[in-house]
Length: 88
Figure 1 (cartoon, rainbow, N blue to C red):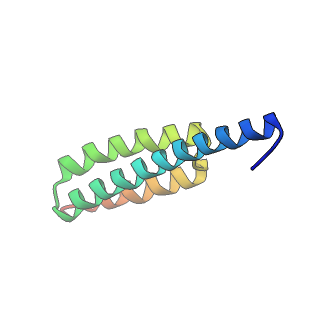
Figure 2: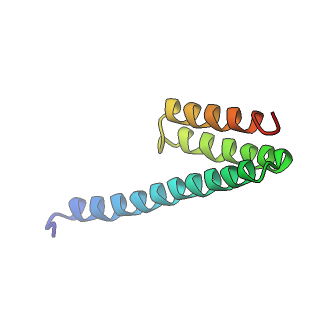
């Protein structure tokens, strides 16, 4: 354990940030699963709606620096392509 006051604070702050980042990444994974299940069910309307929610969550994580912009763009692109392929 740290002895210096500022080091003790850094431990607390970094733990809090790690929990926040973990929650955001978990939300992204959950939303991806929702889109995937809608795609598997061949429900294009539901998949499009869930994709919109996914885009919102991903863009928020990118703006906060939790995920890189290129990672977000790749995930959105792949999911959008999968949704477009429904019913073809």
